Image 1 (cartoon, rainbow, N blue to C red):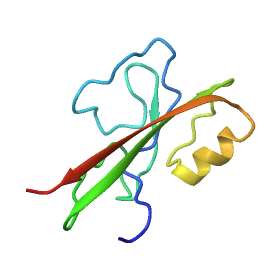
Image 2: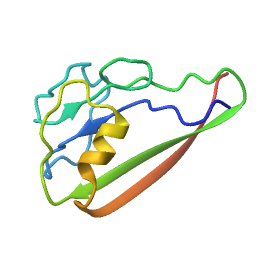
Image 3: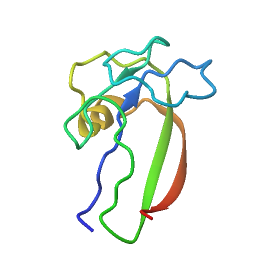
Image 4: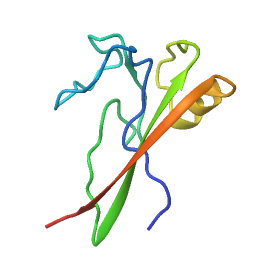
Length: 101
C-alpha cells in the first residue's frame, strides 16, 4: 500500500551456497562470506513479513554478477543496484504471498 518495502539486502553470496538456514544472524558479514546491508526497517539483516492487513506480495530477487562487490558498511538496496550496474550475468525471482492470520 505504501510502495516497495525492502526486507533484506544480501550480497556477495558465494557461488557454492545452495541454501540459507533459518535465522540468519543480523550481522554485516556472515560466516559464508556474504554481506548484509540495511533494509527499510533501518537494520542489518532480514526483516520478515508483517503486513498491516490483507494479502501482500513479497519479491525475492537473485542476481549472478561477474564481480564481487566492495563491502560497504550500511549498503542499501539503491546503493547495491548502482554497484551492480553493468555486471549482471543472470537473474531470477520468486514471489511469495502472505496474509497475517
